[in-house]
Amino acid sequence: MSVETSKATIGHTPTPWSFETVKTQVGHAHKLTPINACLYVDHRDAAEKDQKTLEAAANINLIVTAVNSHASLVAERDAFMAALSEIGRHANDPDAMRKIARAALALSKAGAEHGN
Image (cartoon, rainbow, N blue to C red; front, side, top):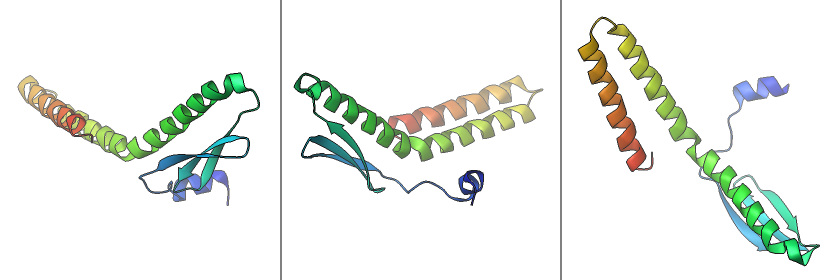
């Protein structure tokens, strides 16, 4: 199966994703679940230990946040595109266009306030 075929037919591992930091013999590992992947941070240089550990944790946290936000961002995009389409159907009615835009913005704001 080609990479292009797999992209079209296989989705990513379902959310939520999380990570746990554990000690290793030479540093730390940030274990990413549920995909069983690890980001290892070796502490060969004691002066870099804290910097590397914090940076790796921030990177893995960014990955987890992005994956866990994906579905809500796609839904938000779809709602936005639907609102634009609806506005387009009322191109000769500025009042209707404003009402649709305000309703779409209110829904977006409500979703953002509730973490959606």
